[in-house]
Length: 461
Image (cartoon, rainbow, N blue to C red; front, side):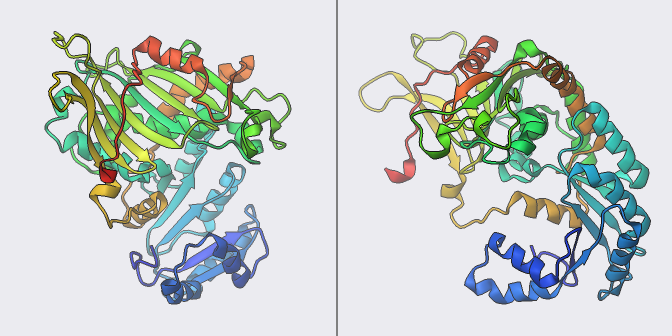
């Protein structure tokens, strides 16, 4: 953002942490993570002139008084706005936010606080954190960041739905058989198992990223694109979802593939940072239903996992069969797919006549792959986009407290049951599609996987 001149000219960047670092040491530590082209070296050196670092303990009020004094000493510091990004473990949130409120707020400008997930680990802990934050800050000062809401295709869902006449009339239970929201990673925990084991895949991905995408797919049209109008509709649709029951869930945990290479030979329990005999799930498929007029009876299938066969995040709407079939059961269901990553795309799977002298239908697609259509457009990183939104004061792509409450209400009973009963996950092989039971659950609730569709890259023809 600084490189591209998108921030106010007088912005200063101040690091605050327990480590006793010099500014130079802190800058050097950042270098391996900064993608700097040779032509940008000069801009980087300008950036380093506006960075500084203050060391102190998170619970120490005097350390925050020092920070406040340092901020006031910067050019324009007396009137400046302040944006606090809390890249911290949840255990220190209470102390840090209290000290920011009492010793760190801007005297003349605005103060805003960015909070990262996890926002608690269940409904009760999340409510406690929300109550604590709301006792210190107003809702318009709190920015709960979920980086999925900064992704191009997640933001595109609203334009696709509400900016196109062709989708409006069919975006409901009369035409849609099921909705599948997928998040797949081709790697395991790779030494981060200790952190992961504490939270698990449901808290890590499903309760936030996938549920956020679901609410954008399922919500009604907001009165406007203002932050609160959009978030009102998301909350409304979450309120229509009953808590998930175990009968609609499949849990999995990856095991090593003896024929795999490198990490693929190692299962989750082979990660030295994972507690022995852990029953934590690394894969989950869950089915939710939105009990309202638009979606009654349509299954929303949420699937996420680690150590799977590919990296992919997508939203897939599968439509019902054409009534009154005249083609002898040769037609497959239409699908509209929004691929969030990798290679952003929107494509519709549809039937067309096979070219030539035949008169058979065959599957083809209408394809909007971003890399082909928008050749030289650089899509900003999700965090770039969201941090810029905080500067601008736009909260549309951030999670409001009532939205968070509803999300935890849906998942907390399931999480407690899994933990209290130590429900064993089904083993699946590293690099596979996940447990076959998950595919069977999807099929049982109405998803059809034909396996007949062949995608041809039109740009290689």
